[in-house]
Length: 262
Length: 220
Image 1 (cartoon, rainbow over the protein chains, first blue to last red):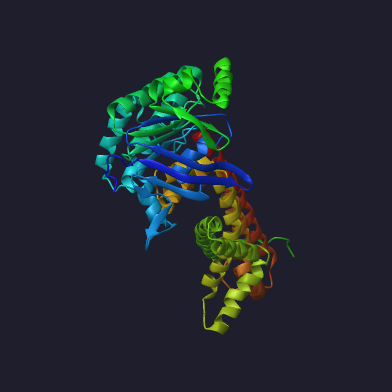
Image 2 (cartoon, rainbow over the protein chains, first blue to last red):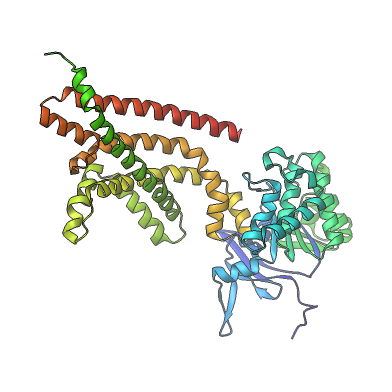
């Protein structure tokens, strides 16, 4: 019987995802330990974003099992057999996961503060006062205490993305997913968002999975880097090793192309 | 014989004014049904359960493809054969509301379709319930842009209320007909009813345009 300590926070077991005939993820196995920071890199179409979207239950999986914190995400155990989970189970397990999107996806008709209060009030059942206190603390942490009453349209992309991070954190997730969170930003706004993520990593007990094109950030921040190619992990390892001495030819080609471009 | 008897027009004005109240009541009650039921139908049409979505879609197509007058007759004359007896005014309002609900549902559908997928995904990632997703996130964004289109259906429905005279609801048209049959003068009452609809429609159209401009400035 495994103890809580050696149990991974996130586990993919032979997870497959298809769109019609196209196999996006091919029997993926991936374990992520509690508090581990995993960067996912790879060419577009390699399935890297799909990994996060399946974990957030935004995509149905076609085969295999995903476990979060020791619990099957999309399945429940009934008489020793794994059967597809109902919405109640999905909602409970989903509560352990937070996600930040490439295009922020803030609710445009709510202020920054209201964005961060909506789910804590209506999902966690916090009182308005508790939720406001929590939201204000988080907005202060991402450096936006003075913008709390602004609507998203009045905020820069970097500020919107920081609100989105605060909004996800307000649900106190154990796992945070970052899906190309700086890809839609002007270059000068990338730093402020990465700084917030650095701080999160340093100050909070969070398991993080991030799909990113920021190789410098991945190298500096991640505990492990996974290089995806054609629906599989082609290579993974510590950032120093993977970036300085890639073993796979695919990785070498990809890194050469990315470094040349950027 | 003088062409338009102003004295007679003045005499029947209070009677017509009282009937106009019935017309306006029928319009707003009918539209309240249409606005609420239309939204419900639009949401049911998006259900992931194929039975629910196709039932809602079939209902909308059925209602839109049959004349409103037949629907009014059906509710008023056919329902009683199955033991459902509904007073004329209620039957008329229900039928109009039902008919326009199907048109409103298409308007709402366009509004709902315009919401980016990212909004649904953010709501799901935050674990909002389906109810809260619609009520707190989707509807507040989907409805304001379609309010002008709904306003045009309100005006359209207002102009269809004379159909209720066919089941003897004493609204404007029916009142004008009664006056005509009692006095053998049709020119004044029918003209006045037409003028009333013209004026009210023009005023409402200006109102809808201003609402549109206001919503636009708010979004800008």
